[in-house]
Structures are given as structure tokens and as C-alpha cells.
Image 1 (spheres, rainbow, N blue to C red):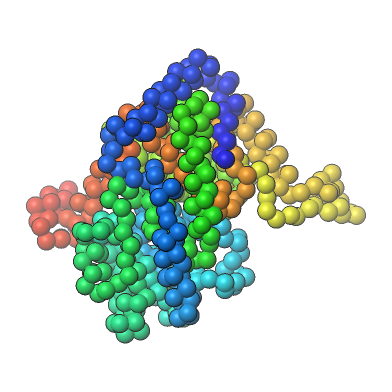
Image 2: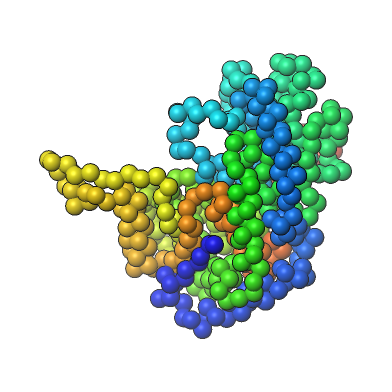
Length: 445
Ligand code: PA5
């Protein structure tokens, strides 16, 4: 089970103030549990861990096995935002750091598209496709998002011209709304295998739906362990208590923000495999809380690398931030530092020590230095980076996000601000129906 520790905030926040935010978090917990808050028609994610059936998981495994029988070695997963980051973060966390270079082929390689509009990216993706045996998962809850639609048009045309229309259809799975949207219409018309994104689950809360689980499964990772970890976390997080880690995390981050004016939270990791967990977390908290002129700006660093770039700013720059450290207790591989007869690097004092011990000391030393430099510290501890612990961590962050946003006083489950750029882009691209907007924006150029 995830553990939250707030000791590194004690010298910044007095306990009475923190307790007041714990009380607010307990109230917000009730709002989330009783489903009486803003956006309460988007709370389907809460029960997902318990509702996922063996049959559903078997369906994803059947797609994986069918494509394996065809010799598929490249799956292009098309999606953006919540339709991409959950799968990406789990795959990065569970992959061997050098999987690509080692060319281990126990499952198809999953690459992502539709998360940018770079022409070079798509052209180079097609270079890769030309050398591989390809299938595609196209994901869009709304079914109308431009970036994935552009990428899918190109990938679909490639698959149809390369394998023929019928075989292409057997290599495409669509994940979208049950009833509406252009992707739903296309999937029905072309007879693609399809899965539904539940109506009451928003994109950034959808990692435990087919949106996350199918790509993770075809990439060869253990979705059953991931779900089991979320189920386990769900049991603990459901308990209304001051010791509930979601209450502690939500309470402290709001306390630091409101009482001390800390406007930025930096999620810190000391394991490169967690880089994309931070990217997923940034979307979850950024899109859920950043509205109505409110919110804590979610940032991240990957240490110890970033201690040599961002470390200076965090230690001595403007005091706008607090840090939340993802502490991983156990490394799953072992590398011991050996003694060297010459000792020119003067590291013999470390002989016999595990590298992870040095990593932990770097983490501890940094935390103390940053506290001394005026940066409050929280930590979230997980036992190790495996599918079970990751499932628990993702569910923990989702649950805590709901509580935190309710303390902040915003609807965590909408994202009205995302539409502004789309309107301008369509106006500039002269999309039919945007004539007025096109005229207005061109006058501003
Ligand atoms: O969290 C969200 O709702 C968004 O990030 C969406 O996932 C993102 O905009 C993609 O939307 P869609 O899946 O409808 O294409």
C-alpha cells in the first residue's frame, strides 16, 4: 500500500493549520464518496478496479494473441492526452531500460501517434511501419479530436494499401464512445473490433479502461497484476480516516498552496522508469485543477540527472514550490560497487555498497538540502516499480486528485480551457463553419 509522509513540511506549516486541511479533505472525501460534488456524472473511474471482469481482460488478451499469430511486431497506438498517457506511463515504468537495444521480442512493440501534429513524426513513423508487421489501436473518447484523427487517416490508408481492406480491418481496434462520434461511425462502418470508453470516465481517469489496458496488454505487460494493485489500493483508500494517504496528500498540498502561497508542485523521481508517471500525473492534476484562476502548477524532475540542471533553481531560486518525492523502497536488480586497487576515483569507501543505497542517500541528502533551502517536502513510498504497485499508485493519484480539487473548489472532471486552442487552429485552417472566426483571427495576425 502507498504511504504518504509529510514530516518534511513540519518546519513550514504548524500542525493546527495542517489539521484544518485534513478536516477539509475529510469533507471532500464525503463529497467524492457520496457523489454530490461538481462533475459527479464523471465518477465511473472510482469503481473501475472492482468492476473489471476476468472476461474483459481475456478479451484484451485475445486481441494480443490474435495479432501475435499474424506475426504483428509493431502496434501503433493512436491517441492524445488521457487517451495516451496512461498506457505510455505504465509501459515506460515496466519496460527494461534498454528493451529497444536488446531487441527482446516476447511481445509486439507499441509506439504512439496522434499525440502531436508533427509531419516529420508521421513520416518517420511510416518509415518504421514499412519495415514491420503492423496493427493499430485508435483511441478517442469523443471520436472527434484532430490529432488522432489525422494520424489515423494516414495509418489506416497505409494498412489498407499494404494489407488490403479486409485484413487491415482485422488489424485495427477502435476504442471510443458507445454511441457517438466520428470514430464510432467509422468503426461500425468498417467493422473494426471495438471497445467502449464508459460515458462516466473522463480521458485522464481512463487508464484502467480499454484505453490503457489494451495497449498495455498487447505490449506484453501484466494487466492482471496492474488491476490487482488498483483493487488493493481501492480497499485502503475507501476508508475515511486521517491516516488515509489520499487525505494526507490532498490536505498537505492544499495547505502548502493556500497557507504558504506555494504555486508549484514538483513531482520528483530517482528512477528513469518513472519519468512518464510524472507526465501522466501532470495531466491528471493540471487538467483537473487548473481552472477558474486556481490550481497548483504540476511540474516534475528526474533525479539525479535534473539535480545538475534544475537543482540550482530548486535550492536557491524563487520560493514558489514544494516537492513530492516518489520514493521507491526496493530496486529489483542488484549492482554492487566493487573495490578498485588504484582507487583513483576515490570511491573505495563505497565498496560493497549497492548502487541503490547511493541513490537513496542522494535522495535523502537532496530532501534535507531542499528543506534547508525553503522547499517543503512530502514523499509517497512504493515498495517497488512493478505492475501491482503501479496499479496502486495510479489509482491513489486519481482518488487524491478528486479530493484535492474539491478542497480547492473546482470541478475536477471537466476541461473547458482545452477548447480555446482548437477554435483558433480550426479558424486558421479555415475549417468550414469557422468563417467568422477565421476573419477575426486573421485580422489579429
Ligand atoms: O482528460 C481528457 O479528457 C483529455 O485529455 C482527453 O483525453 C484528450 O483531450 C483526448 O480526447 P479524446 O479521447 O476525446 O480524443
